[in-house]
Amino acid sequence: MILLFAAAASAAVPLQLAGYPGDWITPDDYPPLALSKGEWGYYSFALTVAPTGKNEKCEIISPGGFDDLRDLTCALVMKRAKFRPALDVDGHPVFGVFRSSVAWTQGSNMADIQRLRKRFPPPSDSDLDVSVNQLPAGMEKSAKVKLGVQVDEKGAIKACNRDPSEKASALDAVACQQIEAQWKVAAATDKGGAPVSSVQSVTVAFSTGAQPQASAAQ
Image (cartoon, rainbow, N blue to C red; front, side, top):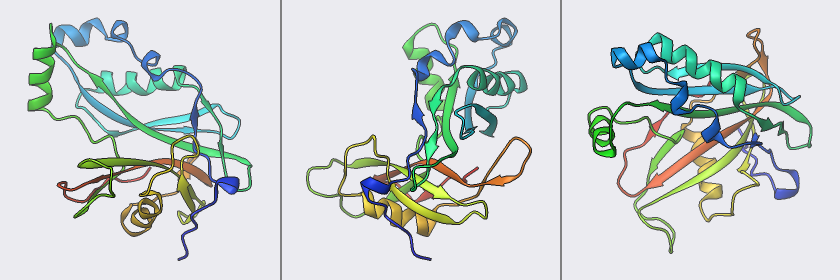
């Protein structure tokens, strides 16, 4: 397979935020019953957005353990998340996939929250973790590269490039190479379950101490 590192003029453009993610879920959304029962947790989700920019579906990909918080997470993301449509390398609107996580936490102060996080570590905010012997000059012990990865309806990678909204990095090309070699790619699907061509938002984290770990695509 030849992985295309698309030039900026013909880049795959992942979903671009059209609002503030902090407004998607707020402390006021915490269900009183869940609070009284001590329910909390981290819920990773994958949001699929149609070429029109309308939210198509939301799936929990790393459940936190409580059904009411799991279901509420996707319900609120579907209702409040706003994005500009993803674009393929030809500039055509396509389905886009965005992955993130929500922390439903309880605690009267930051010390309580930190104790909870130590006991139950939050999920990784990257899709692929890569361990390297040395990072390029000027970088610290870790670095992240945000990519737009175009995936066809058969689950094949058609293009990979730095998210055009991000600054260029010496690791851009390496990140795409690692995506081709290690990432568990899968075709996106519409709300009816049919495979569709998409541009997926993917984050590759490089560090000099982490063990390689790949999270599954949608």
